[in-house]
Image (cartoon, rainbow, N blue to C red; front, top):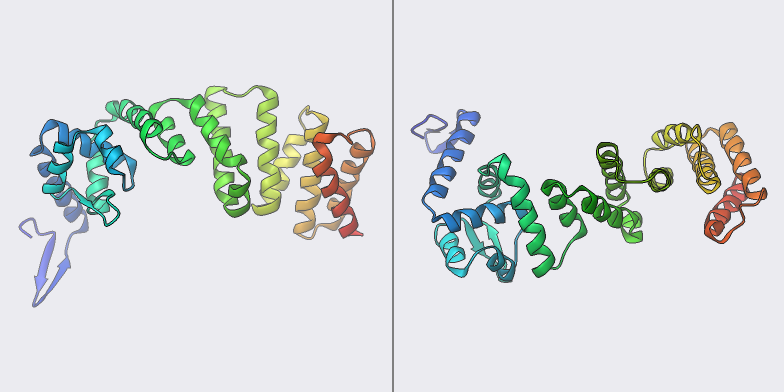
Length: 275
């Protein structure tokens, strides 16, 4: 109110300067953080990076009971009916997390990974998030692959799986973590999922670009199927028949192996559907 961010007209409060209001809120949070003991201050910041409510056991692994009680008493945390601890407001949590120096963030995230693996029921997505920010790129990539390849995620949350595949490819481009065959596996898996549940035009463009590379026959076969399926889905019947023809010729040329039986079933289903 004193800064002019909030004003009152008759009986109603109104925001007069949103930028100034946010700045004022930040200053209030920073002032409250400065009044905490160093141990409670650090605990508040680490809990803020988790971006969710936590069990008492997890909080106690990051700081002792005295620090937790201090944060409860200072109005940073509240305990839910289930006993879990959470920040009283998202803005408070976000501002507390923002108070951490950038140089200190990797070590903080590494500490969270260590505690999450020891104490809490681990969510692969949460683990990948903290591994990435801790700079542990290879472990992050493995965690992302676990999510992307999980059948329940692909069936119920295909866009989440596709997001993980995109992040895996970005990581590999930056840090060269996959060998050529592993990279081809990831790219083909991504195109297959896009052909089912993603952007069909992107699936078509990506499949065509990959088919210009030197690929294992099984990868080439999968991409021709994806191309046939995706072009048919957008009504391009001619290109769909052409792509399906390439796939069936590859199949008949000797790719009837155990690893491709699922794909063989998809090929013959698509052929029968188009007929």
